[in-house]
Image (cartoon, rainbow, N blue to C red; front, side, top):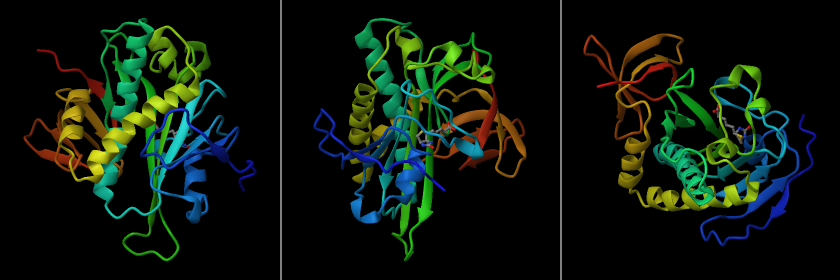
Length: 286
Ligand code: BTN
């Protein structure tokens, strides 16, 4: 049972015309869980739940998402009635683009860090700095977890979705669990300075809002083009673990028109993957 105090309303400094308000809690089990259980009458599309600390943060594939209170930004956007799951996929990926863009602009404003490293997306949910010196070839600084739940009453529009975003903001190497060190980074490490969490939140929400408006209008061309630009897997040899447990090896060939990862195998088979985890990545070198 969740014993966290209920969240209270929080005022953003920026007027994010699209945002439907922010609920804030010092401590919660998981902002995704909060977004999925909050009374429906208090929700609008884009309502945000921000928790300063999560006691049971959720990551992909049933993993935990650990934070260091006050050093990480953990929040979820809720969409109370999702009629079009494909748009939700785009929004999930667009949220990753918004995080990468926000990190780039904070890095440029800070004038620190290595402005040359590429910030991109490792499908389906990691936001990373490409760094061939890292054991994995990249360092992850944010992750996105989108969860969908049927609402009582059901029906085509009876699904609620939470798009949960966890961003490493002020952590230093020693703050990460031993198994993540070397493959994890933070905005502080990328830029050489620390940030107010709410500044990062506002920057990211503004970027999600811009993309969300396009997706809602049925126009995904710009988001698709940005994803192609930020796709760190494109051209790499990847090993993907499928939900069945089977593994697939091939060349990552970008996302298709439905945001699925395309993988071409050596035996000329072409796959379009809706889900899976890239467990090994070897960059393509010309
Ligand atoms: C992943 O990379 O595995 C996804 C991590 C998603 C973490 C965020 S933090 C805010 C939201 N609430 C959760 O419990 N999880 C997501």
